[in-house]
Image 1 (cartoon, rainbow, N blue to C red):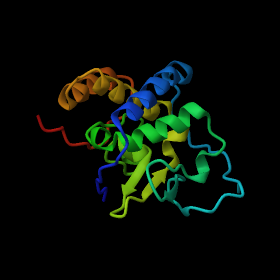
Image 2 (cartoon, rainbow, N blue to C red):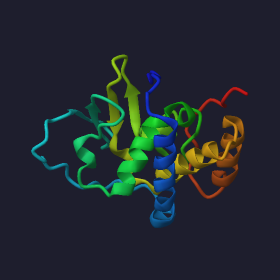
Image 3 (tube, rainbow, N blue to C red):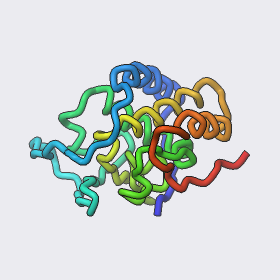
Amino acid sequence: MFQARRFSMGRNKIQMLIGAVIVTVSVLGAVGCSAGEAGHAGTGKPEAAERLMPNGDLRQTTASADQLPPFMDDKSEEMQLIYKLAAASHELLTSMPCYCGCGESAGHQSNLNCFVAEIEEDGAIVRDDHGTRCGVCLNIAVEASKLKREGMSDIDIRNAIDEKYKEGYAEPTPTPIPSV
């Protein structure tokens, strides 16, 4: 079960992440999820706790929200920023559905689970590599964070995401509607 914990990431840092990540949306386009995955070769860095899920997703635990797992080492700077943004925006993304089919294929409950499986009591983050292979996941996280930055309420963001992805995408994750 996902456990929330507040992070000490400053507002300016989050805004910088959002700004940098917005550029990524245009680069990623409307890439869908795929079952294929690149290998996770060692990098000489200390190993993170690692678990391979039945659906092929890799989970690695890091000590904090600012630290990225080894599976991100060969990813673009933009994707790394999105993973940091997802952890920093965990409260928002917990109430945003994902429309890539991961609710059924991976048991995800929200868009956050495409990036973060769990936030432990000590602040450790169990990261999920699902989002590294899925443009839908990435786009929803960036779009929701951008709308939040623009001052939109969580419920209005949720309605905008639902409206945009209601046709032509997979069934959404079973994400509860945010409270008003």
